[in-house]
Image: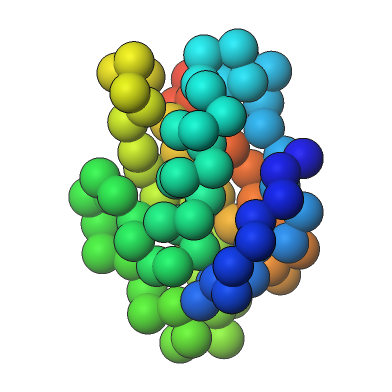
Length: 93
């Protein structure tokens, strides 16, 4: 679990990371990406993300895609109820 110390635009709730992602990603990469995700910067996400306020009100999951410094692609997904956010590799999905 990670501790994010700033006021997020998107509440992320409790943060979980898959074992494979924990092995391949640095704490710095994950922390930076979580901050971007919570601010509404969805990284390399191809599909436009919903506006944080409107999307969350409609019950949409918030999806972001990033690349770590070592080149590893990873995703961050916040569930529709905003209680949980998962950090995972695409192959973990």
